[in-house]
Length: 245
Image 1 (cartoon, rainbow, N blue to C red):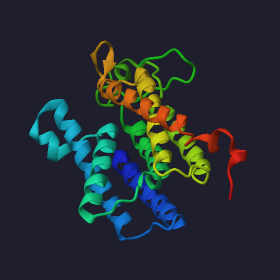
Image 2: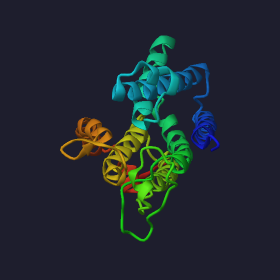
Image 3: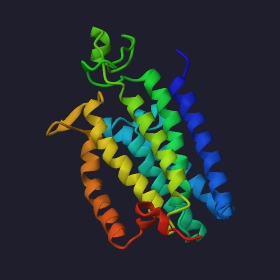
């Protein structure tokens, strides 16, 4: 089978890079510091994905030879990588708003590879359930020919909708960092819910590993968004007519 996962991840990274550069240029923020931040995101994301896989098995070969397909690990690593890169370069401007649309589009494209190569989701009786080849790794439902949730298609739809929403909101939110905050909060809520349709193993109280991770982050994001809402950061989105040129 062709390496669809790697191909679409590569295409996703390429698309995200193009969107980032265009957005940085539009905001007048395309400089050596923002490019260093991108480098930090790529390096940190790669390390984060591998560390996430290693923590699941504690097998050293999983760290370097095979890596991992953990999106949450990659996002966390990318975030830390940007912080480290900015610290080293002495750059203090916020860059999250530049990354938000780029990450959404890159994720949508990358998830196509996941849909083509990984277990789609848990069995379902819904009419849009999909079937996958019996050779799909870690997929008991594939062996029995059961119809399964197309969980990766759900995420592709979410990310494309998020990309469109972020492109609409980018010129309305003036407070630095809020575009990125809203994207993180939205994706965290969506990912927690969509995990109920995914084929991931449950670890505790019927929750999967990603859900256990998000159970810690979601309350923090909720507090952050609530503070922003009370301070009026999101008023231009709620009442667009108040936006001034």
